[in-house]
Structures are given as structure tokens and as C-alpha cells.
Amino acid sequence: MTLRLDPRVDHLDLARRLTAEALGSAFLLIAVVGSGIMAANLSTDTGLRLLENAAATGGALIGLILMFGAVSGAHFNPVVSLVDRGLGSISSRDTALYIAAQTVGACIGTILANAMFARPAIERSTQVRSSGPLWLSEVIATVGLLLVIHGCVRSGRRAAVPYAVGVWIAGAYFFTSSTSFANPSVTIARTLSDTFAGIAPSSAPMFIVMQLIGAAIALGLIRLLYPQPLPDRTNASLGVRP
Image (tube, rainbow, N blue to C red; front, side, top):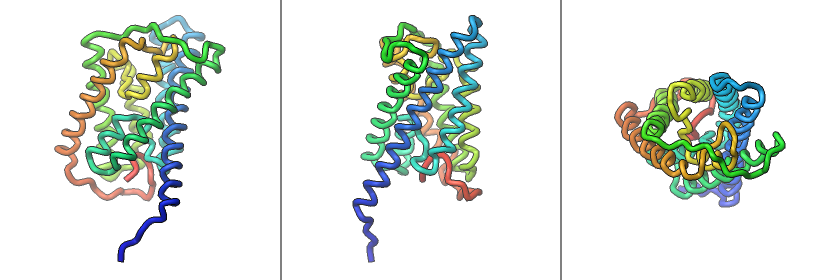
């Protein structure tokens, strides 16, 4: 006997997941852009600004993954969704819809962050970020992020994902010259704010290309290093949705 899921239930589940992805991406960009604006308002020291931006982003990521992990898997990032597709844990349809929700949510988050600080809702960033070292940094940052996620999930430590990702991203702000965007939706959204966290639209395409290259490398490494995912050691349903 084949169990058939009521299509109405399936649509409701998908709607919940897409809402979680959009909301999570929006809050993430509110944290990234908002903390960047606040840091610029509070200090003239670039290092201190970066520290404040990194701490706020890392902390927000931990909270957001805990908040939405059990609903959608808390991807908030097209490369996370694409690698999950490559591993066969999400359908092509859902991957495309996740990416759309993530990008729309991220752009809305940037607009809201601008508005919170009485800036124009949409402003074209003039922060040019274009050089070989920055592009290399985006490959490395993306590979590292995806290995952190799947190193936890596929070794049965799903509950560690929120903290591992938050700490990794906060650290990567400092050990990569690009400050670790590692997220195509975030990259697109940050073109809409001419602030400390912004990136010029002309710089965004190569960042995204490098992030996709990083995702392809990470997919190969995940298959090599973690060929058989281990059972989860906890009862928590956090991190990447199975």
C-alpha cells in the first residue's frame, strides 16, 4: 500500500518552509546591514567596526538557526540549498523556491535595516570590492562554511550547527580579506545599502561566481569526507533539514 500525502498538507508545509527561509534571510540582513550602520555611527576605527559587525552577525545566525532550523533547515543561503540538492536531500523545485525566498527576504531585510537608521530605503552601494585576493577569499569562505555545516550534520552532531556556523562566520569576517560574504543572496542584498556592509553592484557578480565555485568544491569534499551520514546523536532537529 502506498501512502499518499494530501497535496494541501504538502503545500502548507512548503509555504511554512519558504516563509521561514524568507524571514530568516530578512533578519540576517537586518543584522548584517544594521550592525554595520550602527558600528559606523559608534566608531571611526575600522577594526572595531568590523568586530561589532562580526559579533552581531554571528550572534544573529545562532539565534536564527535555532529559531527556524526545525521548520526549513535554516539554509538562508543559496549555496547551502544547492549543495543539499547535490546530495539529494531536497528537490529541484524546492531548491529553486528556497533560493527565491532567500533572495527576496534578504533584499527586504536590507531595506528594513536602511529604514531603521533613517537612510534611503534603497541606495546603490559604492563599496567596490573587486580583486583576486577577495575572490579567492570568497571561495575559501564558502568551502569552509559548507564543510562546517555538513561536518556537523553528517557526523551526527546536528545540534552543534547553530553555534558552529555562528562562530565560523564571525571568525571568517577577520581571517578572509573579503569579510566572508559566502552567500549569493546576501551579496545581492548588500548592493542595496551604501554603508559599511555594502558592496557595489559591479562587484557582486564575481563574488557570486566565486561562491558557486566554492559550493562545487565543497560538494566534492563532503562526498569524499562524509560518504555515509551518521545517525543524529541528539533528539534536536536543528540545522539542515533532512
